[in-house]
Every structure is written in structure tokens, then in C-alpha cells.
Image: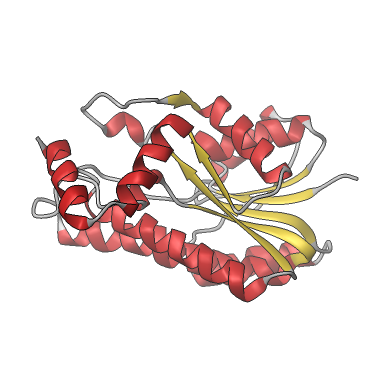
Length: 242
């Protein structure tokens, strides 16, 4: 059966790659992001999709998009990948930029959830995007790491609150080659291409399980770091600073 999928953050990176791959699977796609021109370019590339510009920090724009989507019926999946990232240490980051990162990554995810859940068919998927940076407080990831921990927590809460009516999923990527990660000035272990990330996400969402995380050789190390006693975990984290 043809799936109807709403992708927030579809103008570039992993979101655009998911649009390309789901289009190849015959999905009926709804593409959202702030840039209408970029969305139109992706829609033309994949042979057509519904383009609904929206900003996760603007609930009114999400409401307008949701109303347009609802006019054509329910959806099978809603996924948000919208995020803001700027590397740097906590004491160096500009406070206004820090507030903007919180607004986009954390509050924006909450806003998307509120708009998307009423659109889902019974048993439909709600997909949030965290990060392995949310597993532990990482050096140079400053407020971004904290917001992704918040997204993970929100996804866990929603999984408990909305089941079985909504199938809540969490994506926790490692380093993926996108415009965001190209800001980093350090070697990124295990980095993968956006098309490979898209393939792994789609495969994971089609299977069972709450979290899709990759690459496993990195994510398991960070999961281990999260469960270690603080004296040991913080000692290892300080080594990352150096």
C-alpha cells in the first residue's frame, strides 16, 4: 500500500535523502522546511511531492501545514530532522545562539509533535531525531548535546504516553556527512554519507524496535559510556576535551 509521509527538514542532508529514497519506494511525500525554493528543487528532482514550507519554531506555520495535510486525509509517518548546530565549548558560545539552538532542536521538536500526532492514522509512526551526542555531554557539542538529550527523553515519554495508537521511534545518528558536520574541525570517526544514513533509517523504521542508531561500533561505545559510574565516565569524557 502506498504510504503518505511528512518529512520536516527535507530541504537538505538526511531529510532530502529520505525524500529521494522513499520516493523510489513509491511513497506519497509531503516536504517541509523553511526554504520553499530548496523544497521545490527536491520535489522536482524526485518527480513530484507536496511542498509545504514551515518552521518548527513557528507553531502557526506548522498549523497551516497540518491543516493542508489533513484536507487530504491521514498520514502513515511523520518525521522531523530539523536541527541547528554550532560547534564550540559552553563558555564560548554566544547566548543568543544557544537560545536559538534550544528553540529549534528542543522546542521545535515539541511543536512538530503537537502538529503531527493528530494527522497520523491509527498505528502510524512519529519519528524524532536525536543524536549520539545526546547520550553523554560531549566536548565541543555545547548546547546541541543537551538538546539532543532532551529529544531522546521526549521520545521516551511519548513512546509511553501514545502507545499503541502511535508508533513512536527515535533516530540517533553518529557523524553523517552533511552541511552541519562540515563545520567540525576534527576527525569524525565512523562518518557515513547521507544516502547511507537514509538507507539505514528506512530499514530501521520498517523493522521493529524503538531506536535506530548508527554506526553501531560508535553508538555502542557511547551507550557504554552513559552507563558507567560518573567517576570513570567523566574521566573518559575529559580525555575527549584534550
